[in-house]
Length: 521
Image (cartoon, rainbow, N blue to C red; front, side):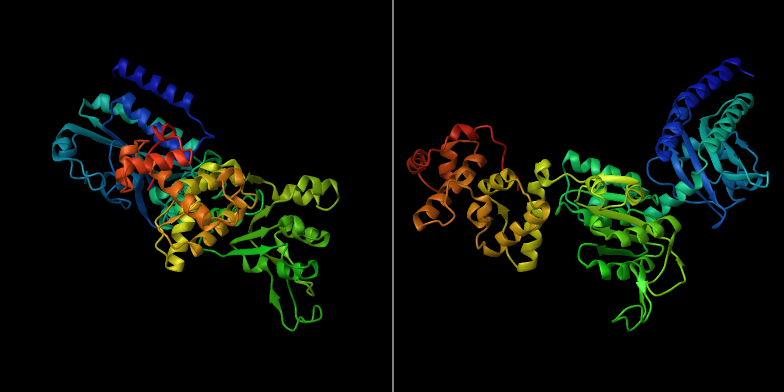
């Protein structure tokens, strides 16, 4: 045996174990493990394939040194990988091209490499509850051809590494199964990302504040933990609740919504838990409650702070016991429901005032997510406005192409007390009254057109409207032409003398736009 190789392998293992983070993301940790091991040991490729006993399929879930996904799967007994799964014993193929057991199906290695590389495949074993070894999958490596003793050392190294993987990843198969479920749900790359959750749920968010919110959604989506969405009215709490549900493993199960503020307290309990026929006046037939309708799915309770004291007590029991009882019935029913709540109210103050149960608060506040108001994420205002404009143009058959720069300035300067909901209403109104190719300041609601921000009164005279229109055209052209007045004159099909006169008349400073970036399309 080569003492140098042994020492190098031991040093590599020590470093991998030292840097292993058992609390970090599982897949990322395994990818880093393969990458570092392959780099340190000189492997051309490394692969981790998992065996699913339910489908009897061995699939390659993580591969280092190969671009794209594996081309094929194996079954027990098929090829080297299948034999290792079937027997639970390691195999060494000294030359890939010379051994008929090596099928080269999954990674499609070039013919030249088959003559240059050896293949080592070891089982990833975990002791079952009966005390017998259970094969989770296989760990394999492509390594340059070498003497048999050196290849045996690599086999020993990989067996120890496989044991580390099996020990550190007790939920390995569950995580990979979850990854495949996410892929089947349409999440590209096999797991939800910020980008595809935004896309699939039509959430427009570019700011750092909302990026943090989306990262929290990614963290909690796949769990069963209760989520409490907090934020001002109109910030999009219901849309984010839907995003959490769509990114969860309950995606194909119902998402049931209930606005707790929309119903009087005497009807709210019936909506939540259902009722039997004759339970109260007007109950002419039995009715399922929202908990029953959301069984195995998700229940979204908006404005949770509006629940009556009695409804709060029954909700707490339902969450603690996993049981609900219809009004007028003595028979409890077991339900499996994931709870997402939302509120704009300060629940802590309601608790102090005796209007909200403290024990219910701790039950629903497992994973709080605070959604910032629109005024604190101004980077999202323009993308949202453009999205709403495009949407309403399709709905109302309009051909508006853009939002003028002065109008953009008004949109971004406004405080938006009604948040995204107010912005949506604003853009719908502007789309309806606009008969031009661009949304301009006078198409926006009067609340946005203060004297300071738009230099106009709410009711414009004909002369004022013309002047305002001229100012907007000139400012937009100055921004496009970087303050060059000759280009502005050509752009507006006018003379330099007229443009110079208008700029002086309206007290516009061309130098202000000399370095202004070109208007976004």
